[in-house]
Image 1 (cartoon, rainbow, N blue to C red):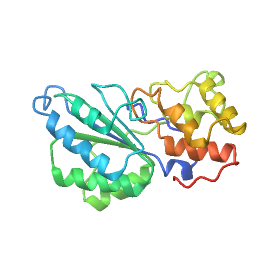
Image 2: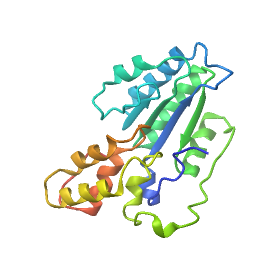
Image 3: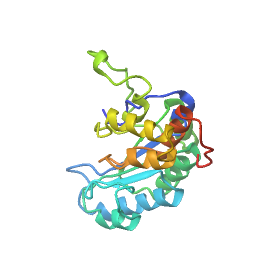
Image 4: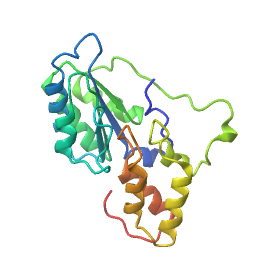
Length: 215
């Protein structure tokens, strides 16, 4: 499974949330993978990602590092992550990755029908498809449904429900803007796949006191 499978939200909200993983395979193509992964990540930056991270650095683009810092940190065997706020952006990156044919595994998380549309356009069949079947067990211990669209964007659970509540409170009281609040939510994510543009939209919908044009 992948830690990006359990993102919650409406279909409309999730249609602005696509995660890209660039994964060399241990024992197969680690050696010499750094320049290939770096090149594929450059495609991501050209399309305008909402967030990115490389496994060597463990700091996303809202943690005080520049894109060139993330690119320069990539070594053989390192993985890279990015998230995009539109189908057009992830589609642009995937077509460039297909043309580059670098031999590196690519994983995309998003609405399955949208991802299948893109793979069909590219003339490829996904090697593997993972689908979240939901959450079983003590679901009463989960954060409320209105909090989970934020917390589930970080696959490692680094976005605290209490942080989300605090950000919502600060937006409602105009202590921060929805964008400032969404950046605060993105900073703790050690996988770089919290989508602050989606979080901004969620905050605006929860506290409709600002006009937002960033989506």
